[in-house]
Length: 439
Image 1 (cartoon, rainbow, N blue to C red):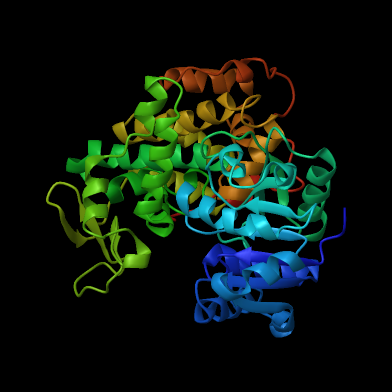
Image 2 (image 1 turned 90 degrees about the horizontal axis):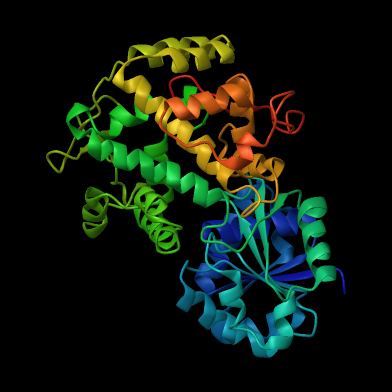
């Protein structure tokens, strides 16, 4: 197995592809072929890569090219081929089948898919190439989000697995987590359950304020650096739909399927092309509107129109935010636990769902709690599930918290034990840094 000296990125003009190029060229010191549909897109990707790491020093390492004219030479020259094109089987498989004839023996190929089956995608390659095919899901934006989910197939070569995993962690400085080849893997499966739960709740409480009502209840004092519904706008409503539909199709039982069911108003917005920030309209309106609060406008699920974002005052959220500002995290958690209003019940239910569903994936999708915490901490910038166990007072108190919120505690949580801290990554990622006041 040769060292990785040359890499080809397919889809190098996109945000993930270009930032991966910057990371690989900058940290890895390797040559990167930047391939796209046309040369203008490839050159655009180079500029994005340079901008992402804020250094022009990698420019000479980045070679623009197109699929039509440069693919064969680039693939033959490469030790690793990274595919990060559109998130559907047809597009990815078609491109991988074009790559396949030009692969040298031992060349690593990986897909940056955020949740499609790696085993299924491997079928686009000839059998002898499949032991070197993997999933390498870089979280977006890759330069800021350090997580890389690593997925192997049943035919994976152990030596190549170790070599690529080591390159990602030691050279590219990624937080590498090995996850099972399951729908949406680990991070997106947990994260998009929470995002979809938020839009379901917005629809359920549309007469109380809907979207900004839920974003206020689930603000940064609940352990995330960005509001849930504004996160969907950042991701894109179309991408959100693709991910939750994919998980829905492979869900285990009706209860899990229900959690990934897309609300009707989301589909209506998608049909209208209102798919988030990239379209300047989604759950929020990013066009400057006279008379707005300064935060733009929000979509009113009741009327189907945009309106100025209202001033929503939720008393317990204000108290929790005030405690976060003075770094009293335990105090803020106690405010959440004791609040008896409807808003408090919603907040506790969502947090209980997060903790319960995340722990339910240990042993099947992720090997242990530490990997689970890395996924959510480094992949989403959310307070990891095990850190919530400690904030709530330990396993016994957490079980009570889940049961009182109507969430069945998973067996793996019950087996965790009741003595000592549950969270073990504090030196790597202090969960207190992920709380925000009034986000």
